[in-house]
Image 1 (cartoon, rainbow, N blue to C red):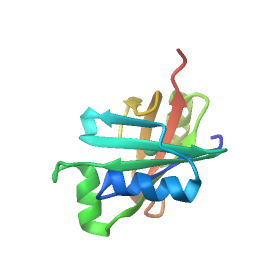
Image 2: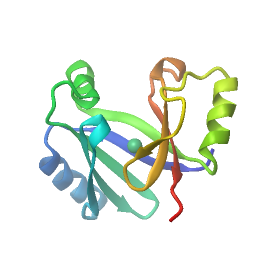
Image 3: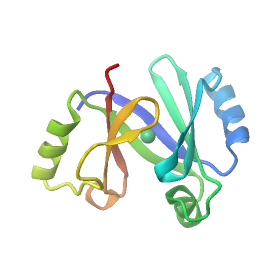
Image 4: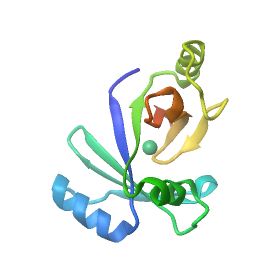
Length: 134
Ligand code: ZN
């Protein structure tokens, strides 16, 4: 487990959130990327080591909109950078954490990702992400 890679925030209005977090971080969004499998549009902002992933969906059946319907807008997950995602997944599984996917998935921003169920992490959805080497 390395540093916190980013914090994911579920939002209702992506343009408005980009504007707000742009002003907060004093930095412009550098990338919008759709994760088709999750029906979600992501937008990334960064300033120094701080990175925010805004998450938005137009589909009411998407996990993001179900989350917003239940809890409102706000922090959706915390992502940790890992060196070797397969090794970390095996380690956390052995530690009793419930993994939401059995093998790494392709996530946004050039990452292999795996999510850990909030039930096994005090209500916090945890994402592991490993940079895909080009
Ligand atoms: Zn994320």
